[in-house]
Amino acid sequence: MAFARIMGTGSYLPDRVLTNEELSQSLDTTDDWIRSRSGILERRIAADDEFTCDLAEHAARRALENAGRSSADIDLIVVATTTPDQVFPSTACLLQARLQAKDCPAFDIQAVCAGFVYALDVVSKYIESGAAKCALVVGAETFSRILDWSDRSTCVLFGDGAGAMVVEASETPGIRSTHLHADGTYAHLLQVPVGVSTAHSALAQGKAYTEMHGSEVFRWAVKGLSEVVKEALEHNNMDQSDIDWLIPHQANVRIITATAKRAGLSMERVVVTLDRHGNTSAASIPLAFDEAVRDGRIQRDQNILLEGFGGGFTWGSVLLTF
Ligand code: COA
Image (cartoon, rainbow, N blue to C red; front, side, top):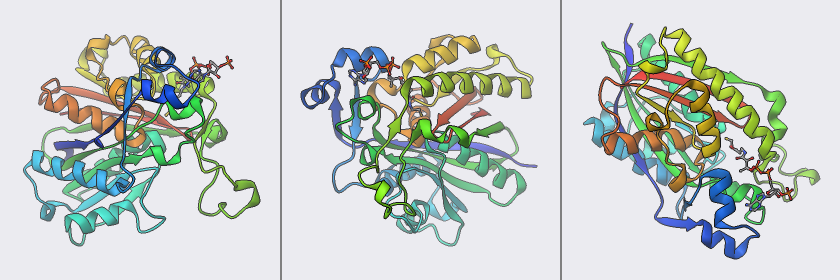
């Protein structure tokens, strides 16, 4: 059986930087509140004529270049997104056309902020079974489009961006384990309560934005993420000293620190981009991964633990050797 190995990474952030200071001019908030409660200093916001597939395309092209591969090599495209350009076709199909990656399966995955972990799980299974040899996996979001910009409890936390990986069949590991979880009974704690099927309902008016019970989500995120760290280490017969880098979903620095502490990992071994990116949902893990590869922190043969948590609730981990 082949291993699924990351051959290259890429990412993209829109040019527009939105600082806490700027937000505090139109909202009843302060830089100090946002910084101290979340760890976020600024986030990127896509231009009016820039869409999720545009962000995905930039990140994908960078990942292909980094892997030394071309569109012709790709035989599977999976895009994790909560903010697709269109109802259909999927963003993965739109991306396939842009890249001219002909005749390969292409589909989106929707698991909100755990989307990239879900996508890697699926992609690794395609590769391990021999159904694909060279997959392009992307997390891309224009989350700013599903925020109520007058709701200070949510809009200050999110941002836009995209990250991508080229994952290939290899004789050496590779993705060592994936563990996914979901519990739909918590849907009401973090949601956009309106979708395609409900949009015409009278109840739906004005509700196409993210709603969140922040402190409850916080509590469940720390619990879920701590459990998946333990689960991944036990499954691989490893302990925290075997992990070179933890790359958590970037939602709140206090969630990240609490999870790292419970896992017994020092913050020096945790990649944090939240301060500059905010929460970019499905894009946050591949964005952080790519940043740490490009600045030289992540090296080949290191063990990396990815963990995601999002609306659903959905959560999970990927433990890999780079
Ligand atoms: N500026 C100033 N005050 C704000 C504010 C803002 N941007 N947003 C909320 N507040 C206020 C609240 O209205 C509340 O005021 P009150 O006590 O008068 O009612 C007060 O701050 C405290 O709110 P609380 O929700 O208790 O703060 P908190 O310490 O839990 O931090 C979050 C709030 C949202 C930062 C935190 O709960 C969180 O990060 N939760 C998880 C969110 C997350 O990760 N979501 C995505 C998961 S994928």
